[in-house]
Image 1 (cartoon, each protein chain N blue to C red):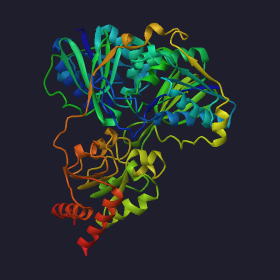
Image 2: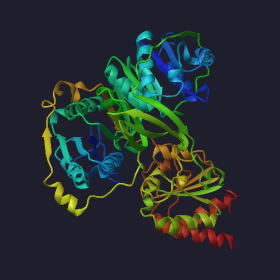
Image 3: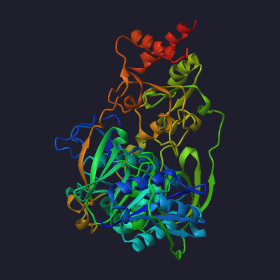
Image 4: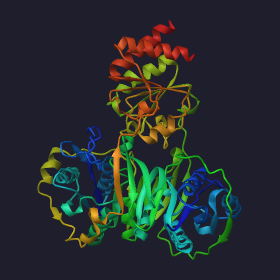
Length: 321
Length: 260
């Protein structure tokens, strides 16, 4: 196996925690002497120095105003240059908005194997083996790379950040960027529109299983009201226009950590679980007993939410009176 | 303006997923299929451009006979023309091979805009869109939550974490991999469905497109060793009994947590 290249990612002036997780994966599958890293951005040398001794190994820095913000085109060019420079045959990125954006392009440019959003990676008999979810979390897949070059993205949070020390070096690579066909304009922060679920102690959320926009005020909101909590929703509900975006719990909505989270008719896609798994206690009500939500829930009811939720609402009301 | 929309037909979201005896994939024989949810938003976004200005919308899909249904639905929604790559030799292709087929169609069609979904509901790879853009040497954006044309440029908003957005400017031709929720997807009207029957649907093979050497199981750079039901962790304690019993059990727990 050739060298392994970690593509580290800057966020608000520091290297993201997920990049240190990549270092853990790299150390797991390669000899420390084979670990290379790329730190890309503007004025990043200090961070690169730190990373080189904390899992990054031999770090190449591409420090250029052209890559001060993420751009698929410029990142692609810089990463390809460093892959060549470091003689890397395994390239690891985090499955973040920039990682998932550029990684498939690298694979196509290199005619490489591409595996995305893996939660584990292993080396068995000199073959790289990857684990990842498929069918929106309902099944898992084990895949092997069958090409000389492999590009993979790893799910943030899938492993602990690397905590060892490595013999680090830092060198710089000048990249003369091509004329760009795209450019970064700005980042817009999320607008808060009044529903702040992050402060709610109890959240009752509805998912696709609620089936109908009218059922939210009829079924889900009354339970939230009875418990003195707030109502939330999963992504399909918001995508369908049943509730506005501010109700959305998940990686692209709000990250919540209430004392009690009640998931009604939510199957438990990864992007939803990321947003609510930090809840102190999780109750799941779903008609499909195999739904992934039951894996993360503390207490579950396999049944029709239109029977269970109103009965629970009544029981909560009588317990209070 | 010409717009190419790449669609995938995937198992229906409520379909029962039984794993094949060799573990290679799910049994696809007796289940219902539908257009990948992300791709319906991609198609809608293309149709909205066509509602506003002169544009031809071409839909392309790769798959067996059943895929015709997805393409007819897309034509019924308002697409003008369909290309169906129906070829057994394509079976077992990985995402990069699929991207090579779509890029071959892209080279023939020379679209100003290419739309794909961000990912497919079955494999969840989220790779074909950017791969097609690479092969066609176009700029691209993924997780697109809005797209507006401004002359020879397109302004796209990409979804980041926690609801933040990144605004990018792309020169045409470009590719957009669309996130769900970007729009409200229309239904095919009865009139649309009737009209769709007369719209052109070309069937092509890998050889027609000059990519026969690049596709299929033999060319795949990743191999599925096995798919399996995720190992059960501790999991939830499941309350059983009548609805009343279950409700009482839940209330008892909520009381125990000190929340009632």
